[in-house]
Amino acid sequence: MTRRTNIILAAAAAAAAGVAVAGTVAARHGENEQPITGDALVRASEVALAHTGGGTVTGTEVGDEDSLYEVEVTLDDGSQVDVQLDEDFQVVAEMPDRDTGTDDESDG
Image (cartoon, rainbow, N blue to C red; front, side, top):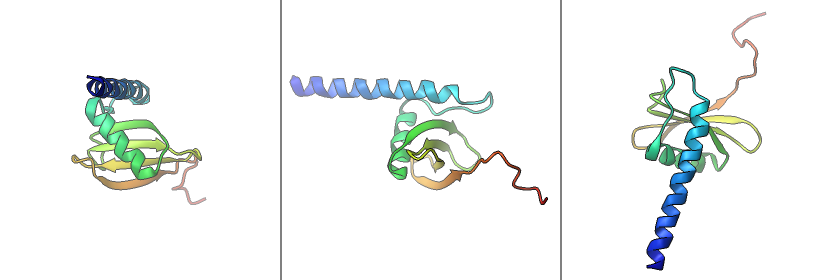
């Protein structure tokens, strides 16, 4: 009975953490972007954080133009990385967020 109770409590804690992350992530999305939700959010977050070696999930998107799932991770040094995942939650790309606030396309 004790082992089963511990498993149930651990599952409930994981679900609560997922809901907290979902609320934070959902608040960061524009009108047209759809955040990842539910079990997919938990799995995508786990994979992205394992890939980056830590950090905080600060945004997600389903149906991103580059992959099925995009997870934005803010690293401990403040930099941001977008981790692209396929439908099997496999990392297919990683793109540093290099938004500096300047127009990189101008020539002068």
